[in-house]
Image (spheres, one colour):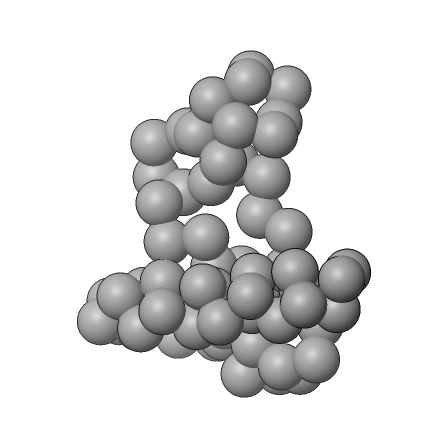
Length: 66
């Protein structure tokens, strides 16, 4: 069951990532999924599971940039 949830989360991240890719990244920055797609991203500021209890503006893409 956990694996199914993780897979579903990864699929959702891929759909959100396509919207994030439409934006050009600054020089030297890359998407975490491009570095290692096996890393599970848990972007807390994009959802309500964070210290403020709600999604924060600017984190809509749910994508890690490093």
